Image (cartoon, rainbow, N blue to C red; front, side, top):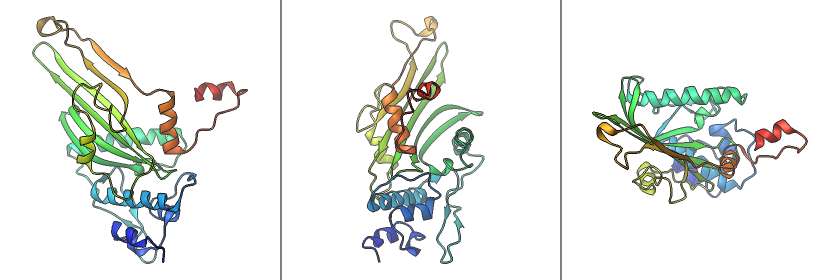
Length: 266
């Protein structure tokens, strides 16, 4: 029996029924993976345990079949189902619609990327079907490498008597060497910097994707208020490549003679 089987056994009851390790363990629970990259056995094992624990503790966007019976059949977990009439449905359904479009554009089977997304934190206040405020943390597990990306989004919008208070911030943190311990939502919240939207994702390895707010400085308030938007996109070419390589593996540079491919690459 492999030396670290006990770590797998303690991660999830279904995992205790297999002696698989490394990439085989990841394929068993989350496969088929997309052209998995080369990594150590311990890296794939830690990734698998982390993902199993996160999926048991939090909500996945789509149910992940748990292959745990002795005959190898799949057991569908009902633990991660959500109330279709709750505020959670707004986030879950929105992710499904957007990610399914990405899957179609990339010629992936429906659900290939959706099953990689786990919701750790969601506080949403809706006004009819539109969000007045939302704050959520999402894990996107790579279908290719033993990595994942934490994503945090914060949004707030409140109409006042003669003005609108509005801001948002979106950031991410690439976890290139995840431990077997599943991330804790409260611990992740403590990594963020509360304050101006531009400062939220500026420490502890977090990267800013974009932020914005309505400016109320220089007397722009009350009856004199005008909709003046301030903001910035912080994701540049290097960051795009980092995200792509974390999720889909190394990005190969096309031949210089292929002008269309080079344009897409840049």
